[in-house]
Length: 576
Image 1 (cartoon, one colour):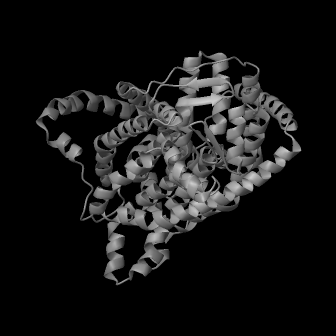
Image 2 (image 1 turned 45 degrees about the vertical axis):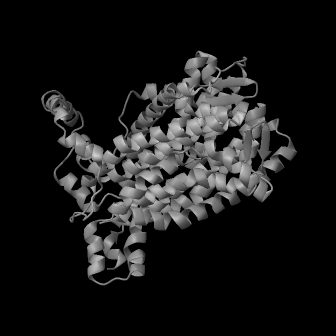
């Protein structure tokens, strides 16, 4: 089976020009500079609530954390569907949006949080500001991989299906409901699981954050575990982790596992799999008599309402061309908004340049050395992650019976926040490695390897059964199947996972290169340590310089490596 017969090439889209990256970088720098200036202009002392380590508080803390996670996930999904669709299908806005998305996912989350926190606390009550900032932080740890997965699905839609949609003259809503969403369903489900795992990773930082002398703590599981680690209370750490595992297992069995079993209907294949994913809870819902009233309500109330909404959306979005263009509005309103936005960004750049001038020359040399050290750790973590996630992901994604056993284990392992385990690992690693430099690689790996694994599982489980049967029928060896079917089919998913994993590794450097627990502070050479130290000390000029340096480095690497690989995935490895 020749690779060219499975994956057809597509028309090359126009490569975003370099000036888009420059514009995006200037825009982000201006927004950050404006936020830091606004935060510094409204300094005031703050104090967070006391975090109780009593076991009886854990159910309430778990409910708080789940509420923040759900709000962030809802925002992430809405953002991803709208942004990813426009980026994939708009000839005008697509290149700009893709360049901005590259830059947004390159912004280190934990260095962005103080700007959001201090800016919101200047105009909102502290309780509201801290809650909003917490949701924003979790959102930024969830949204980018879902957006990239949705964009990847939109750009790799089979040509015959797109032609069928055009032939039936479906509108935008009909296409979304009957083609776009079902085709991306498996990838969205697995990336949603990964997004929740990423949200757990940053939950501790989102719920217990300090900037200099200002305390922005929130009650929740993350702050409970952080407080327990700070007090070196082993019993409290075990109770917190146990509660988190109960929540994760419950979500897996009652939410994710049923959705994965139900989502099998959206796989692009002409032959059903011998082993289908199963869910005892889904079977119970479908067979239980107690569900009869629920089904009656669905059939008599919700179904007609959904049909009415569907009919309205069909009328609202009539059949149109393949590409999407931004609707035309009042040109003067658009120009006024553009002038105001340009003025705010220019003011932010001016204030930001003033902050950069305050950075000492020796600090700039430390930043250059730190970027080089962190880059090497990121590459080491990515290499180790790909080495084990590729075979394991293919094994889970192609064997439904094995997936039924390993998938819950993998999800639980991915959802346990590595930040909660850092003190435990550090007690051992620091003594073995005599410092944090080598241990930081493992700590970064714990927080980033799952992005690759879940994307590879999604890609392997999406390979049509008829193609696998054909490969076996013509006698291809296992090595030939990997070369001509498995690796080409996985390539778009590997690129998507690698982009989000590398961004996650850069973000994880902030919590892995500078760690405080039990009254001890450990630091490694790296840009993450510089950003974390500047945040802890309230050194905003150094924080701004370190954050911009990391963004420029990540964006440059994305442009030179990941974006070219993404284009290659669109051109040569589209399933047809």
